[in-house]
Image 1: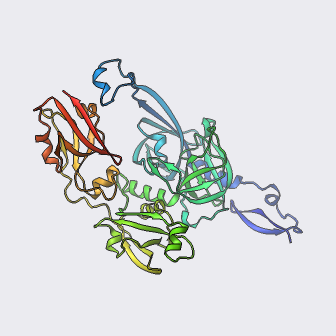
Image 2: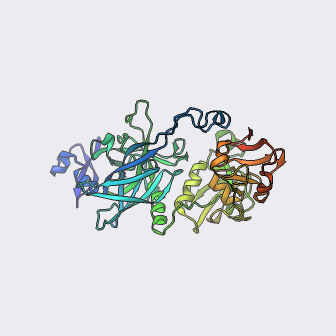
Image 3: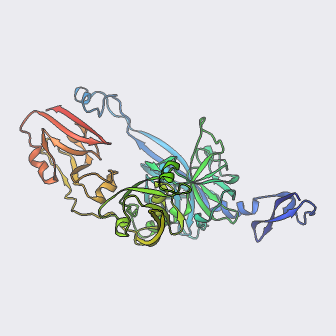
Length: 462
């Protein structure tokens, strides 16, 4: 017998009941099929965000070049310009806590937030993270605002009905409907990393960034963040950051954190493919195979070793490295979580304690002064915490990494994240050696650095 779904409105929330082809509609809601009750409930908590950004514009094409810049010093002046960024946000706290995307407010000098009833507030950033593309704002002098509750995003299923709400192209608050098209999308670049995202076919366009993706009970399930498009408009492939990660962000912002604290894995691995599964005698590929473990990794402390397969954290599957990192980030530091893994064809369970990256041995941070050839250079000794902050690989050996470069250090081409290997042929092993190694005893200099896996030699003459 042919069956289909029609909505039934109860207490202002759309629910669904099966109706047979012979059933006569019993209410106006069954006839009209409207999302209006959910929209009325949700839209007051979705806001428009206007960010003013001061952008430094280089007048010379050679400015900052490690070689040509020395020949074009003073050629043209930088001309900063003011740009306006437009996006959306979601009120998640009646006291004026708003969640949006990092890329909406990045480098903003002023942030204004407009509610659906046209009230305006100034806002400042409590917590922002480029890798996750999330930002938490505090509206100034705001209270008793409508706020959206967050839903456990692990409970979502492909096919669930959703609404996307935001301010596309600046035309005003707009609602689009669709379904969840996919879960756990991890191939899309987000921020400065790879995200773990909800996919939806609800129309998301520029300006929707930071807006709400909600379910039929009016609960926030994700923050709209990106689209796949060739022409700049919606092709029905949009992505949202899951609410579980958003919740941890909000919790950390309320706790006073100014930098998002991620649990440290200390593990390197890859998603299993069919060939690997066959070699391991498995019926299907699943999980993440561990290829390297840091000696201080919490996974190692939990008893795992190279070759083991991480299957699930807290009962949720982990089939990609991005999924593992998302689960850890959403759970938060200090938690003890159930870990299921595979070893020699047998499933095992243990408890994993989530920790921050160890800040030992001491980072011995140093900034070189004016008597150094590389004055303005800030460096630190590499340890797990420093490696995590600078995006260094897990197996990066002990050494010295550039954490900041200004003045002559920047002009000579050094960048944050560069690992110093040698100066004028002398190996660099500790930050305390740099003062002596960078005294102006010669006019010709050569600095060997490791940058993004490549060894580069920077040469300059004073």
